Amino acid sequence: MKLAVRTVLFFLGFAQFSWGQTSGSANSFSSNSSAFTTSLNSYVVFGASPQQEALVRAQIQIMQPAVLPLRVFFVPHWKYVDNTRIFHLHVPTGYTSAVFTHLPSRTVFIDADRYIDDSLGYWLAHELGHLSTSSPREDDAEKAAHEYRKRLRQARVETRSRVALRFNPGDHAATSGSSATRK
Ligand SMILES: [Zn+2]
Image (cartoon, rainbow, N blue to C red; front, side, top):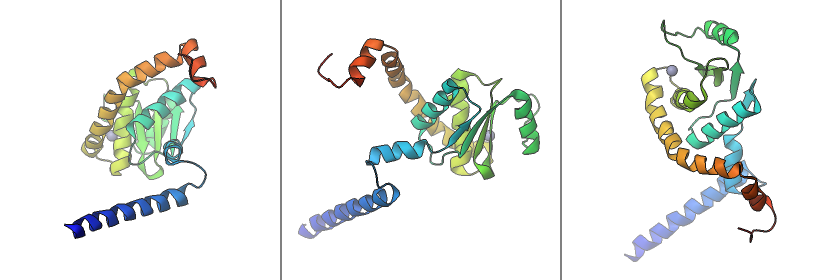
């Protein structure tokens, strides 16, 4: 019994030690939570309006994919079509996807003229599924996407209240001010 307790304590101590090591070497200037945030934002978004970039970043942050893209490109439709040709993307006839991923470069392309705000998260989940499984197969991507879409759904209610808060000037002033006592 005593031995078991000591073993558990040993493992707890070890876990703590290795956790400290990891966060120390990966990030020497801030807390673990902000290190996490930083790594979730370490990709570059090109060609997007501030709103588009904010939307993509918010959704990816919610989904917390195992593998992040390196770049996300918003491109005009003609260029999107051009890219699917250049990257030899096989799009079945009649299939209108507005998002695709070039796996080797971990680059996600979004057809800026065709994507729809409401379904972007759904399709991003699929592309992140390709990235985290490192597989071009659709069923592999969908399997991983299932979990990411669940996180999106779970966050939706939360996000709605947060957005409402953000657009309420009174609340915003209260939360950003130095006095936390005002309600
Ligand atoms: Zn796919």
